[in-house]
Image (cartoon, rainbow, N blue to C red; front, side):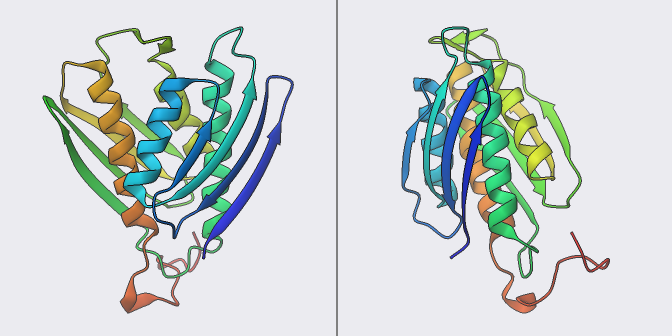
Length: 195
């Protein structure tokens, strides 16, 4: 079982996170932000990742530090759980429909960080969540689980649906990328011999 436990404490947030890549999609998430809890629960369920997360953040300011720092901690957990990345597919992609919305998610667990974010969010808020923070979450993730990730909205009108499609789609996309390639189970999936 590929697991990792991350403890990250700053003057703005205190995060405890445990991740199992080979789980069943169980999530126990308490971030202090209800909408983010919902998105991370969907992410874990669709990725078949087991995720336990608590965060005490400066939410009296806003959710920015909480969202960004959880993205950082989740990226660190993926990096730790993957180790050398021996035997994984490395690449993943998923095209997720959510009612009127269609979002493409693609990733390469390459060891190089890049986020291609082509997502138009019609509303500035969903509940009390600033929707621009979704990009900050995935930036935190790719910088700490160095990967090339592209998230592209093909169509969409409802901001909740668009963000839900992003998190579900990334769960499915990363599930494929971290899965084992049975033909190359002992190999690092790169001609360089390292990722």
